[in-house]
Image (tube, rainbow, N blue to C red; front, side, top):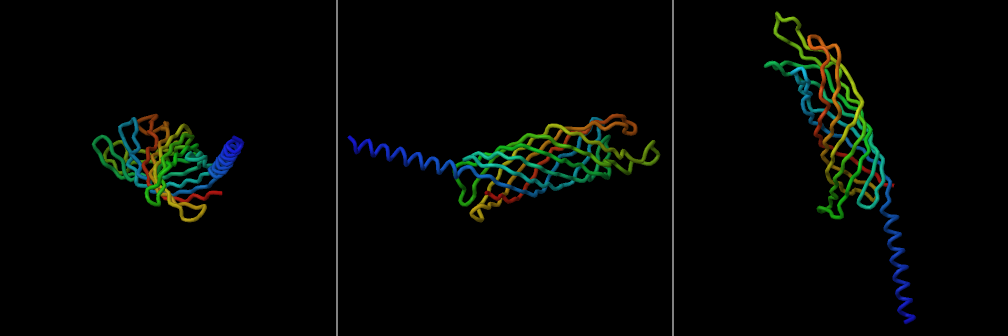
Length: 220
């Protein structure tokens, strides 16, 4: 009986040590950075005119901590796309200007406990604030003989709620370094621009952006 008690005590102590070691190993602060190609939806307005956006770019920088399969992080990001054209009232016109978003986000990720070959999948989401800015957005080349030759330029910005969803895979390239490849959907609030010729106040919908991105993550 004494030996059974001793064996049980040894097992409990060993399990506790093992659990403590695993728990300590799972807490892993990290920094991460990504760069991506963005595919924004058109900028819609309540004036019946939409701005067609070119593919743009995005950069993110984040700091976080891994807690087992869960990662929590704070992220700063910047996105920008140029206006390629404008459409409305049956017209397709060249466009000028750009739309951008400077954001601060709080994200949560889940890393499943399985790999796909050497790849570790992840899914995540985030909420935060974003400053959406439309700069010198205009449609040029309206038919001659009309009251104006162009629509705009208009500019405006607004800071408000933003959200995003992420998914992708990572691959370890060193003991504490991983490369990532993923997809991200990002959305910002809209903005109301005052004193637009012929229209008065005009509301622009916020940015709605699909993106593919590649990055690196360093664990400490």
